[in-house]
Image (tube, rainbow, N blue to C red; front, top):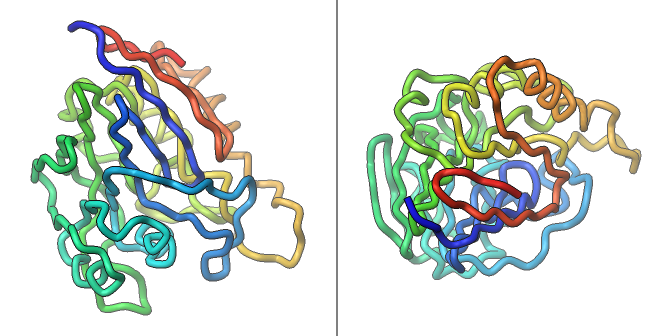
Length: 260
C-alpha cells in the first residue's frame, strides 16, 4: 500500500470531530453550543466550521442537536439513521441520506459504511422519534476512520477491516454512565479487537450538568486518565493518543500506520 494523503484530526469536544483527509472534511455528531439543555461546555468554544459532509450516529440530543446543525451550511450533505430525516428537513437541511446498518454509500467523495452500535434507540422520553443508533467507517482516499458514535462492545467490531483511525467513546456527560456506553476499560478492549493504527478517545471531558459554579467538576478528566492507565496495562501494543477538547493533530498515513 503506497502513501496516502495526509490527514488532520480536530477533536472539537464530546463526540464532535472533524477529520480532514486531502481537503475532504467530515464532521461527526456536531454539538457546537456552549449550553445544551442542563449541560454546560467546559473548555474552548468550537471554531467556525466549513465541512463537506456530516455524519450523525443517533438521535439523542447530544448527538443530533438541531441548534448546532443550524450552524452548518444547510446544503452540506448529512448521513443520518433512518427515521431522522423529517426532523432534519424541518431544520432546513436539503441533502439528507437516511441509512441503516449494512448500508454503504458514496457521498461528497466519501465512502461511508454503516456499522452497528449497541446503544439506546430513539431520541428520548420527550420524543416519539424512533431511530436505531449506528456507527460509521469513513473512507476518504483510502484512509479509513471508524467513528463509533455511542456504543458498548458488539461482536461485529471484529469485522470492520483495516482501520487507520478509531474514534471511540470512553464516557459521557455525567459522573456516571449507563448501559450502552463504552467505559475506559471496555474502550481499550474495543481497541484491542479493532487494532487501529491510532485510537483517539472522545465523548468525555467536555460537558457537565450545570451547578452554578464556573469550575469544572473533579470527575471531568478522570475517564481519560483511566483510559491511559488501561492502555498502559494492556498486553498488546496499542497506539492511543488522548487529546484535550479543541486540540488538532496531523496524521501522515503510510502503509497502514498512523503517527501524529
